[in-house]
Length: 99
Image (cartoon, rainbow, N blue to C red; front, side, top):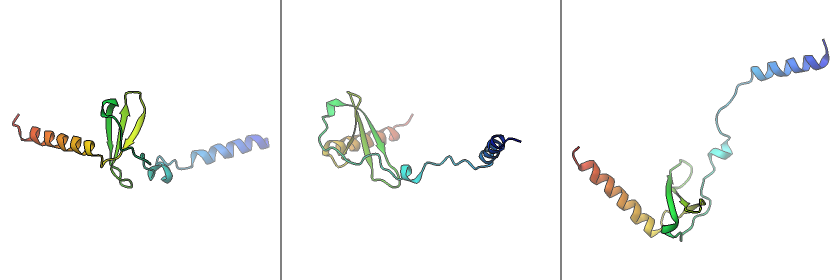
């Protein structure tokens, strides 16, 4: 048998019996989305807000702007705190209403 054919068969056999891991590498799992945050983002330029709560990172707020850029907003920003408070009150009010 040719040495190249034997090497290919050995390689294919090794690949078939190797366990495949579907987990992300640790460096990607532990990385937080927001490394820096902005305190001043004009509210009228925000199209969408995303809220991320991951085990290894603080509460993160990501704003998708009308120009399709994404920026991280400081969760302690006053207008954002008021927005979250109003949203929670609205959810609580809707839960109390009978269907």
